[in-house]
Each structure stands twice: as C-alpha cells, then as structure tokens.
Image (cartoon, chains in turn purple, orange):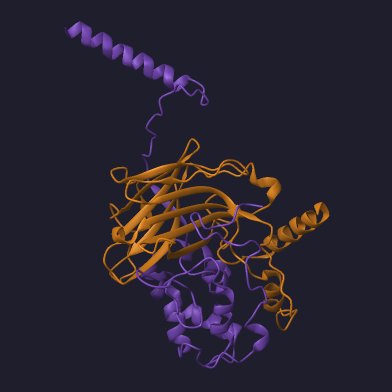
Length: 181
Length: 216
C-alpha cells in the first residue's frame, strides 16, 4: 500500500515535469497555478489627472510617486502653492472659492474622490469631483481652477485648450474604452 | 494617411522627449517609457448603476505600428487603492497581475499592510481574463458576483493639446489656439478595466481612490 502510494506520487511528479516542459500552445496542458510570490514595491501612482506633471517640480517627481497619499499633503502642499503662484501670479481664489493654500492643500493629497451613488464626473457644470468619467474634459476643468479666477472668466486664452473630446467615441458598455488605433 | 501617421509619430516623440507629459504619461524619470508608467486613471459608475468601474492605463503613446508587440510586464502589479473612511490610507485594494497571457485579479480586499509595498492577495481571487490581442478577439470575463474584467490595448482615452501647453509654459505662446490639437490622438495604451459591485467597496458615500504600479 505504501509502495503503491509512492508510485502514484512519483507518477504525479513525472507528469508535473512533463506539463512544465510542454509547449505553451499545447491545449492539452493543464493550466498551472501561477506563482505570485514576492514583494512588489511602488513605482508610480496617480489619483487626479496631471497633478505630478503640473504641480511637482522636476527634481521631486519620483519622490511624489512613492509618497503615500496620507503623507503627500505635509510633504508637498507648500511646493504646490509656489508652483500655482508661478503659473498664475494673479491667483486670488478660484471658482471653488479656494485660496491658494486651500486649493493646493486639496490637490497635494492626490486621490480621486468618487461618489458611490449618483453621477460620477470630474465636473459637468453642476457636480464637482464626484469621480472621473472617460469623456470628462478634465484639463479644461483644471485650467479653469488654476487660471480662471473666482468667476472663471479670467485669462480666457488659458482656460480652454479647445480639444473638447476624445479622438474616438467611447462605448456605453464594458470595457467602455474605444478599440485601439 | 501613412505620411500623417509618420508625422504624428515624430511629433509625439519630440514632445515626449522634451518633458513630463499629462495626464500622468511619462510623469517622472524613474517610470517614463517603462512598463510601470501609469498614464491615466478613472473611476466612474458603470452602465449597471449598481457597479463601479476602475480604469488604469499604463505605457502611453503606443503608436499603432508598435501596439501588436506591446505587453504587460509580469513583474508589474497594478493596484487600485480604495479609502472608505476618509484618511487617505487604503482600506481595500484590487490587484491586477499578468501571467502567461492572462491578467489575474484579486480583491477588493483589505491589504496585508497599507503603503508602498504589496504582496499578492492570493487568498482573495476575483477572476482572470485572457489579455486581448491587438486587433484580435476581445476577451471579457464576467465573474459569479457580476464583476467584469478586461486587459489589453485600447485607444488612449486622454485628450489635451499638450503641445500648446508646453509652448505656453516655455513662454513661447500666450494662450491656447482657437482650434486645439489633441497630442494623444491616434495613440494607444495598455488598459486594465475592472467593474465590481459597489456593495464590495464598503458603505461610504464617497471613496478616495488612486492607482499604483508596483514592481517586483
């Protein structure tokens, strides 16, 4: 009995070796359980669009990507404020009534908030930061908040890039993104 | 058409070579041009309004001629982080890890520990999907709890006249043009799309979410 079990075990091992060595395209092969062991260390992160690109100075972009969001505010708010005032020296408040300190305090913690009920949009004229949908013109929204002043009417040549939609229509159903070019 | 594509390709390379590029494409030296470079992240209510969709794109500015050869990196995990109590620390993660032509998904689940390192939450498999081939069959997996999974090349959904923005920032222009040029038109990304029931994300009315790429 013991020997019999040993033989089966040996056969299983032998079969296993065959399976591992057989061609990837061989349909007869049993799908092996992949190896997911190991520790994965952060390389990049992103919440809202274009935050690292626009607000983080060139020497700090890698550091921003590996600073957890809960620590980003303390680490980056003052640098974000300096960058905002460099981009728009005339900044007072914006359409959200945020001062420079308030606005950059909100931006430095780079998370995308999303509502769990109702419409999800970066900005649609009514809803503000309830998510980010594919067709949201997020750049115009950010330009408006950076350059548009309290009424959104300041610096009109800087608040709209005049690219108002994607180059392919999105799908209404999963996976929502358009097929590749 | 061929000439147009060539010009677009050259223009994109020039722009990419100049400096960091929005939305998060080529945002920082350590990731730019690599397989862990997140280009964009979206979170929105699904067509079925009981579900939430998360999209994370990597490897931006893939020209059509290069899309067939583009691959997800088996040493790169893409992780959706979800904070449902307002402290900007992830309470749940959804992980995507490629292996041998398939993308394997785990979660939503509380991670072993929050922060900049992760292990794969193998005890909480969500499902897997064949990575769709360029211009091949589109693979979508629907799991028993109604989650949907996709991984493969898609049109880059981002749109922006980044070229003119660069001119403005460099002081060579004072504003955008009356007719903008979409710097990302005609280019592809490697896309991961995950749809899950909202009920798997906790009971908060607002979630704070972000995407991470992590390398082994």
